[in-house]
Length: 133
Image (cartoon, one colour):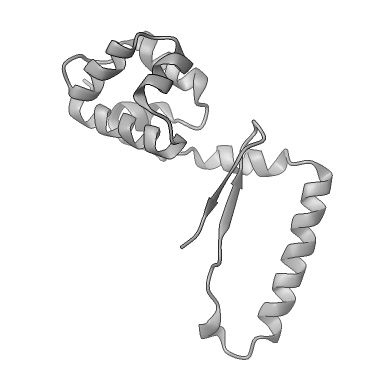
């Protein structure tokens, strides 16, 4: 059985991750805005149809994570697939950047100076998200 409060918190995490409002989610998955509001408040349980619409609209969402918190969000294998579907030009640019970063790392005398500057995730729809520590 799905814990409604935990489901609502995972739904809120999804909204934050995609940087969308509850109203935008409702429009995207074609449900009434009040349905989202009632689920987020814990008043109603999500229906199977509701869950399936989320999974269809957001392929990065893992079913078991959404329902009971087990698994990962976003899907780990989805990120690997996205990387493999990048155009060859982008792959070449990444390879050149990686090579230059490797050379910098090898020439660095102090490994304590190494720090991640940013992480970029590319999505199938052509968008991307920057993460900076």
